[in-house]
Image (cartoon, rainbow, N blue to C red; front, side, top):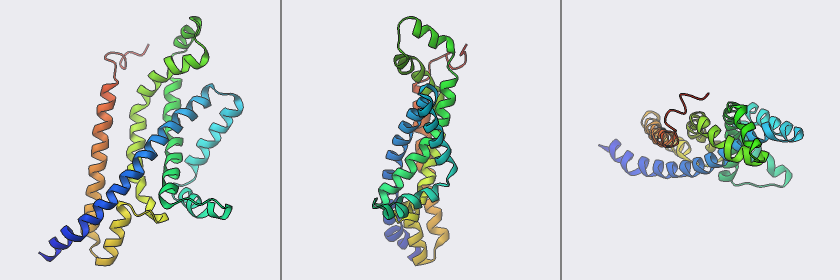
Length: 224
């Protein structure tokens, strides 16, 4: 009975507060990550050679460095150069840039899957390269990239658990504080795991709904 009261009165309120911080981390990181992915992927294919090189370097750098090291650099390293970020913003920047690098690869593959004949047809009726990319290539590519991009967002939900390493006390951070104080590691982290499972399940449902919403019947099966 005492254990139930402890979970009800102490654990759940703290974990709900941590869950809210996690959500506030995940949503902007996912949005900025997708935007970075679309921009970098497009520039890597259609941009100037210098821009392509910079895009490739961005993807290589942020996919190659472990996310935890990136968090440490943004939060502990930048103050040495006079730049100070709060734990929250350091986490959002790290998550968004890392996620954007992975999103870039999904979207780049989708862009390359668009038939060259469609691009040639758009140019033949007077579209500029910019108009061709924006109105012809990107809408199709984003639809094809959606499953991969959605998978990266699912990973991002779990990556957010690293934020407590730079003192941004989200769901995992609250769980660690509670478990360290009560030594009820199994009970506390079981609840933490269930909350992450619920977040992933909700995101999966939303992404599946979005994917079905943008599916053109018969198009995805016949791409010729």
